[in-house]
Length: 460
Image (cartoon, rainbow, N blue to C red; front, side, top):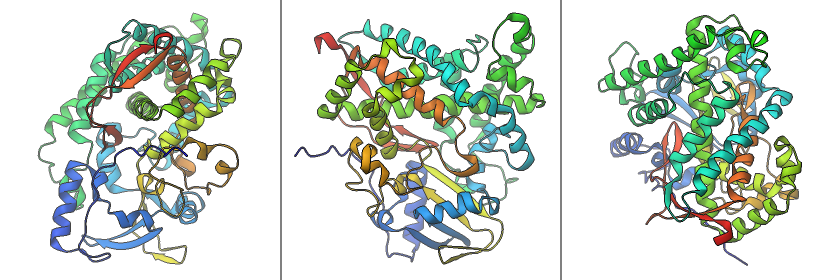
């Protein structure tokens, strides 16, 4: 039997004693948070379902129990609001966009964008996604034998997909400038500021964040230009075209600030998470020859040219399983956090008001008593009976509950189409001297460029 590939992990923390932190443990924690927040977890955290604890005077609950997760994020979602630390990282950038808004503001924004993400609308985007992907594949094929940084290639590709689908190819956005701004922002503000970690009031200046604020303002100016340019155009009816995401957003009764917030949310989150997931998937495939050959055989045998690309997932179950397993090992949303408004009881554990409830999907997706060989790349776990045995709410790559990612269906369809287009023509071999390690900077970023050698499959 072939041994399943286990990608390398970041070093895990060593704490003095379970449940009892010493000064040295606090110092190690803060250093890890600045370096790579994945490194705050110890090996024991992968075997703990629920861990109530106090940290710097605040009540916390680390939650990796599927039933407890369902209680907090679905059954009693009304009692668990956005976590202050999460908001401190995202709110300065996204303001009241769909990821960060709460209450009536969130309900209004969700209602405004929901019509774009119905199954019928999402399926209608598939031919455009395929065209963008095939054009990108042809460009990459011209570099046969060369080494290309696939992390950046995927960032460019997924932004092109969004611009062609949700924004009808609107050219008011300088894509190179925008992706550079997102990169700069994640480098500057991708981990919490030390003042936020110790819950100092927001009015206290966050030293070292002035450059991040300038990047944020520049990104907001860029997307505002897109909205202004679209407002100046004739309506979809006058131009004889279907209304896209931006048209619906502008016509939803949102003020200009809210339009910018949500436009920025979808441009940033919608391409960044998918790009990272695709780069990780290509890396995993390059390290598992048996899985890659099986995927290539499935793509080759499928009647893709005779089938609408919205239905490719049905034809490519192994390809979809590969993506799902990649999302398990490298989840798009590696941290979900809420704060309780009132006292609650979660699976027999008292949760006082003001408790920070934290789900690390990095931990949840590798729990030792939930997953067989939890650190190994085994796409078969998402097929047939094995898939049925996965406990509900043990796998959360797109979040959970009322605030589950509204673009999840779009993202999965897009990733299947991207892989099918690329890998029916090309084989991509990892070409760096060491494997990439994941670093948590809002998304799970590889710490290398994920450089790959491009080979035409006829010559592979």
